[in-house]
Image 1 (cartoon, helix red, strand yellow):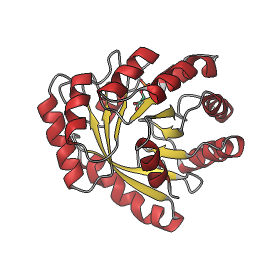
Image 2: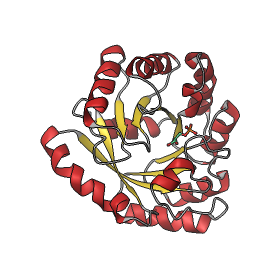
Image 3: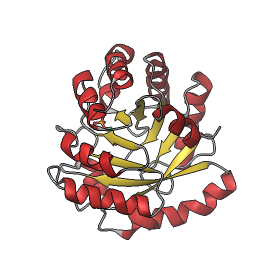
Image 4: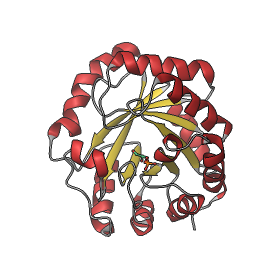
Length: 249
Ligand code: 1GP
């Protein structure tokens, strides 16, 4: 079963937790330790990537190390066309739909596509939407930030992503954001989404994770929380539990 089918079949039964590890934030040894601890905490998938571009060799070495120490599927969350690796289980073939710069909508994708085809890595088409405050990804990705209190704009973008054939929709407040995507925005997008909905940015407690999941996120991503603690498993376990036990209502 490919990663997308695996993801779809889990989201049909329950909510999914993903751990984001940014290889630009620490060395390979530490990134691997975080993945090992996150697996013990019950995370479903590991995402590797971020807004700071790193080269293919660093991606390869990080993913090889994580793959040889864990069984959790690894999905690349690329910030640029160089952030690819044959060792990953899949890559989000993502488009930052609300960027002002076509490079982030289609440019990097055109550069990466022939390389990915040769590698044979599974590509999952994903519409990526950045909300205020947007943090680093909002600046680097030159996003026209979507107002976090404006469900109409978010819904219009999500519908457009879906009509373009994207298989996932990601609502992003920005890594380390002081606030999450507004649960009302999540709820409104969930109503029209026919594909799994990912939400991330600023989720650092089980309560916030449950709030976002109950509003309609199928997949909840946390990143900063595991990079800021020496007790990854302890910090992550209650968040993973909250996500997996929450239902949309
Ligand atoms: C960022 O959505 C992810 O792309 C995770 O955000 O680092 O705030 O958990 P945090």
